[in-house]
Figure (cartoon, rainbow, N blue to C red):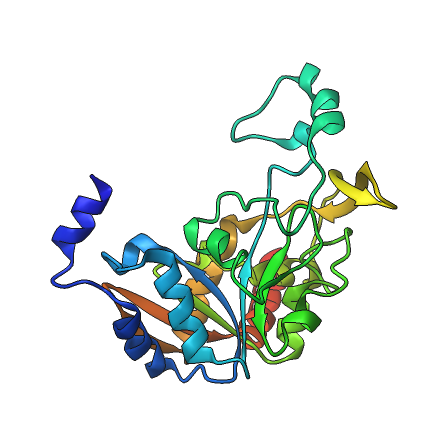
Length: 268
């Protein structure tokens, strides 16, 4: 039924060729770009997520770098699970029995079909964080995904910070700022109250599976839509009609810096 609806909405098929034409309006060649997308918002895409990924690769080129979140939120501390929660009596069983995170096989969760397919593409590298990894392809892929530490996974030692250092871009295709992962970097950098929690995930260490504990903040993306809306009202950014939706391209560093200031002012 969903596909039938997309066919009715689309006057003609959305193709890799048409996506390339649309995305070229954003001048992405050679750029470092983190992409968040909703495939269904594009209309009926011939080739689905594969067509979108290949279009992005062709437009960005190997001289640039394409990044997507590859989060696997179920490889995490079960006592914090809410969607759905599990009985407390299950916690220790889950910690003991959950397979260890392996970048090549651990699936993404809750991100949609495009990041899941992208992580399996040729020459894509995935970072080592068991819960909050990123996948990358292109010139800076290895550097951006390298040494992704367990503690404070979206902070100053994360792929997000490496995108920031490289003056990268954040591209939203058919999604809002509630999906803009880069704003989490601002949560760490802002001078405001943060709640630190102990998390855990299954990893392989010295050839054996262990349950690794680590520290991180309690994220709050409830504010991201408001931050993004105010940012858009004050700063210039690029847009392009892409399929049946709109793609928005932002300067990631500028946006993160704005979000830091926004969060600090909110505290006052």
